[in-house]
Amino acid sequence: MGKSSKDKRDAYYRLAKEQGWRARSAFKLLQLDEEFDLFKDVTRVVDLCAAPGSWSQVLSRILIKGENFGRRAWEDKDAKLRQAFLGIHGHTVKREEAEVENEKQPELRPRKDVKIVAIDLQPMSPLQGIITLKADITHPATVPLLLRALDPSYDPSSNSQHASNPVDLVLSDGAPDVTGLHDLDIYVQSQLLFAALNLALCVLRPGGKFVAKIFRGRNVDLLYSQLSIFFEQVLVAKPRSSRASSLEAFIVCLNFQPPEGFKASLEDPMGVGDNLEKMVRSKVEQEPIVASTILQDPTSATWSAAPGKPMAKNKDGIVELSLPEDEADARKNGRWIAPFLACGDLSGFDADASYHLPKDHITLDPVQPPTAPPYKRALEMRKAAGGAYGKTSLA
Image 1 (cartoon, rainbow, N blue to C red):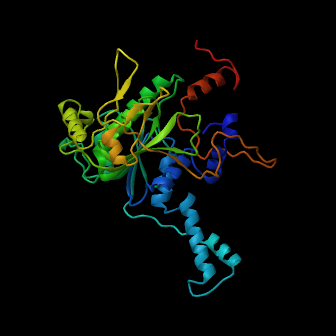
Image 2: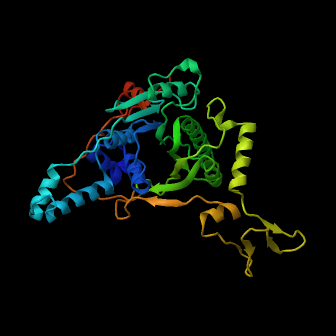
Image 3: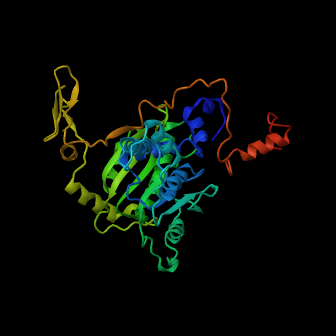
């Protein structure tokens, strides 16, 4: 978590430090969970690109410690307050007494047999109950390390790249260092997502979930169609804590259903070659996902919709596309567009707004300072050159 003037005005930046989170990105996962109930029946999780550990911290506090946050915490608190106020537990109390009692005894619901593995190239400070691996998710050697972390009895000599005890949820909040060139950033992010997906396919159980950060671009709908080969439901979400000015969004893939005969491997990612062609053809035969087309007569200005395609040009010269209301019909008859959802309480803080600080505001230090920031070398050079604002020299 930085300390720039923009960060100080960011309500979620300050709120993260007040609530003890390592980074403001924790609110993104919490808001995604409120919308999709990601943690329901989940005990085994893999967190990719985890540093500095805010998402792993959320997993630790919810799954291991049994805490509740956001809407779910409010609902539990309201239910207990109502029960105490109405005397469901055998005696009636005043509302003020019920509120005090409710504040004193937060109910924790830790889950049994929880296993969480966090992976990142950067070192990450330890968290309670989290197994941390310093590894590259794009390298095939990472798979045996992950499988060994998930199952200590795993034998690397077996050359198996599938978990004997698969996981329920795979998360990836990774992103490259952006350059400002959107096309390049989107491409690099898509390659990182490709690596995360391949690793997820090796460890996810049927019915599992996959959530990853994406950068929305012109051809992002192709990504949705590709993910729908492996998951029954694919949605795009934009948490309220994610700045609207940012290209980022999160792809939420539910109910993992690998195609028949598919075997994931980072050495042969997503069945590249004949396997992939056969897999895609089989999926298209079940639910064709093809772009609607419009045919134009080259000798005239008339347009006509392709057979079975709900697209036509009206009298004003505007091409209109009629999308079916039913999602299944949309998949069969036209270009399928993944549903886009905004997550988070609309009455909450706006990530793009600046909020005035009260006069008695006290600036808090980050919960967990960066362990190995990329700018560490630059700070050392400045210090050697005469202080925080000294000139740097490469000589």
